[in-house]
Image (cartoon, rainbow, N blue to C red; front, side, top):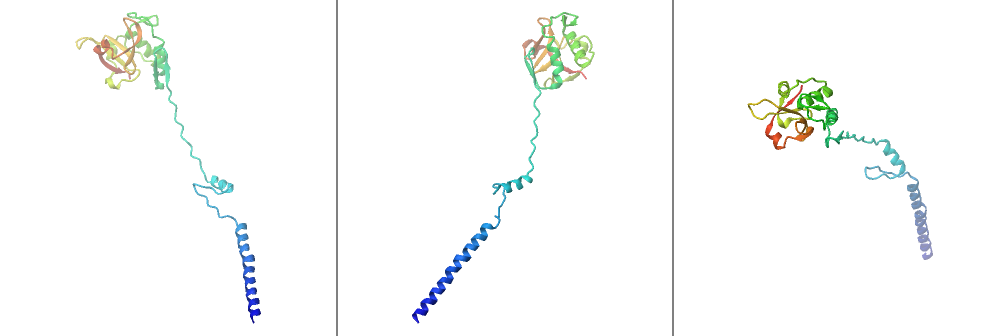
Length: 206
């Protein structure tokens, strides 16, 4: 009886061991052969194939090109300009720097203030201005001092009862170019005592 019980118990143990030996490895093999359930997320890509699939749906964002500032530097004027529309004006007036003052003249051999301005406007803009600074002032659009732009005209007079006696072409940062009786064509500043005291108005040629 005891022998039969022992044999029965051994048979049961054998069956159980056989089950774990055959079935458990089979499940393991099935999981190894089965395709992996990879997940593609923005933070991780599980395989090279997944990366290819992800890139197929990736659309690169094109960056907008920032236009480069079209600045240029005038050596003769020792000034830098960013407005391309003023380039012709700046290059032209720079060629006149150092021209001696000659009353009633308007050439690079000699010129007075109004002769210089009329020559520049004719050459750069194709505009014929009136010859004297006083008459020139009568045909421009008056503008405020804080609204002056490159190419506008600046006028000077000695007192409210006297007419305009001098004119120049505004450049930038309070600087203007003109033909002075002492020095000829040169760049000056509206902040200089003489021009600050006699400054009258600014005008724009339409």
